Length: 628
Image 1 (cartoon, rainbow, N blue to C red):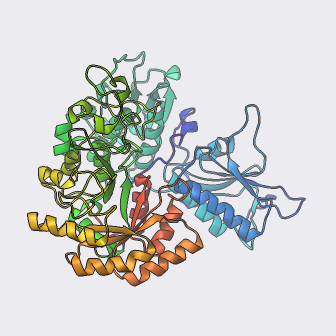
Image 2 (cartoon, one colour):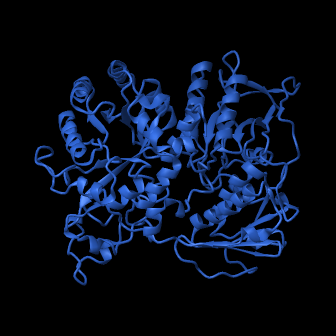
Image 3 (cartoon, rainbow, N blue to C red):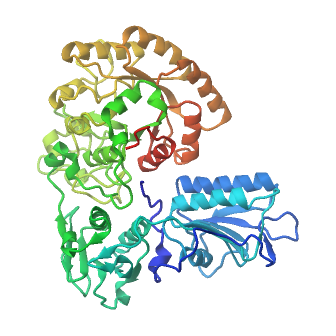
């Protein structure tokens, strides 16, 4: 099962206080027949309190969507016009309303009181004073709590609960208890500093799911207890700074010390500790097994063997199961209506954890289970194809400090720089910009991307003004004379690139035919067009493309309004088992409820800016018969 922390402040309140395991409670407990005075949760008259749904200020993604659905459902079912919804931000010195429905990890003390009773996979619906807390130990748990509330507490178009109402669901942990050299992990203390606090939050979240809760304290309150996992340089053990992407774990007696380059590296180290515990079935007799050091391998090494690159998200997510990594199954699904599952395209790869369009973000997508990458390709001055979205280098690299110096170009235009000059540049985190941190990652070539993708993933190439698929004037006559086929030959990868953007169905068939004649391999064709062009494109592909090598994309961002939904249904239904893709990459629509709508109307491929969340959606909505 995959685990996830959807927002970095999860369990932050537990960090500031003891995180010891609460007293046991039954798997299900509630007080349905209480004689306590009932609390009306939804206002119907001026005499009843007006409630507000409160959610965490920085909440994003599926859980925010669930909170919105709760709001809509309550308004609709109860007919209440006084119910409101807002985030938990408060002006300094002010307090929230006494009449609130608290969803998830809000900053309210009532949330903290309920959270202290929950493990990672537990959830609760509980009245605290005049407030209602709907909360899980994880985002999935909170979603389950919302579902429970709607099914069991919304009755006869109203919500009125006893003042001591409390429903708690407690899940089973993987182990009764983890032992480190015969000492329960729950008696260990996680000691953190101000700089390692985010990693400690993530560790509590991940560990509590699998092993149960443990105590965490700030170094200022450290009592020197030997049974501790100590994060960062402390008076206990000072450390020197480590290079980029590096961590080390030392064991002295019963104390485990971790030193790392940054928050991401600390999480990687904690993931290693978790994995050692799992590998040893919850019993680690020799703590020396935790001791290790990880340093970023040379690029050439992990391009050749991606498994050498430890994932930054290792503590928050698990590597996709075998069925989702199966290349042949992926290739088959692309051309047979996706075999009942949703296929994924990650826009610019994984810029949630790595620089966009980077080799590292490509590897990240592979291990997540992403099927296709949308990558931006441009030629350098010496006509080598690299991955870069902008036609300038400044947003995503440190080119600015080189411009006009020691023979470097006087501009930041990609086309003015040679590959050798670009090789000195370092990529910025995420989607770059002036304030983004620099990494040690480098700008990749298309050849490198194809080496990683070979027999793993597929690529939709973008920025087609700058290149052509193949060295012929018969197609893409207005595009630049840099050829993707050149890098297909260099990498020996003729399958990964989908013949797609900015070509007609007829041009796509021509490109496929020429590559087939030269290599004996027919790359897949993914033709994009408006709804009105779908039937004609399909006819052309059936007549001229190799059988079973094509699919279709409906052009334009999907909007979940009735007009769009109906038009898509009308177009998709006659296409039969042809795989059909669409995309939504706006914050408002790149969410689970919209993905579900897209799936329901027959869309097989979704392009997203949130591959981690989309893969969770896919895994929740499709399991193969041989679920690996």
